[in-house]
Image 1 (cartoon, rainbow, N blue to C red):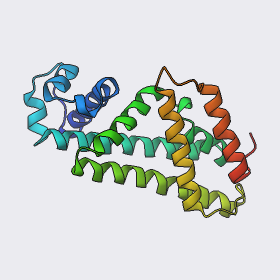
Image 2 (spheres, rainbow, N blue to C red):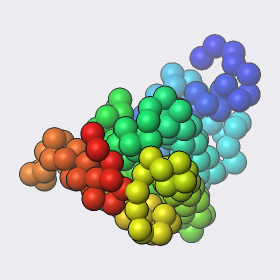
Image 3 (spheres, rainbow, N blue to C red):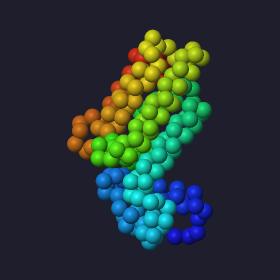
Length: 196
């Protein structure tokens, strides 16, 4: 592995961890497996992280931050209605199956580790706060219309999006991607008056 500055090296490690998680879940993470994904010795993992739990937690925080930044870019690029569709319909995101598998595995890992549960809770709460903020801004500008409390509505939309995306990660659940998109569109129309 070529020389990289410390933060670049950590980012490279996070990406390798997330690639492994997409295949094996957080429960399948080992220093050896991540090092193999990097094409490096396991010492690189031990040099940057004191424990496997720290590696997992830091990687989830990295993934969550990437998602939040991507959402902000969508909101800056598209009208709020179109942006919310893209934020909530993970099918519209490249590698959405991998992203969904990462978040399914994160929820599972949170049941096994109190430290990871804290990080997972922060990640979900941050997404909720971001979505609630988008809704508040849309209501304030008049682009969105709703009588529901934005915080409650944001939780409803987070739950809907996450559940449907989780279903799509399985090859054995009959719901299709087009049906998921249709459900999300209908809910955004019903709750916020979004017309697309």
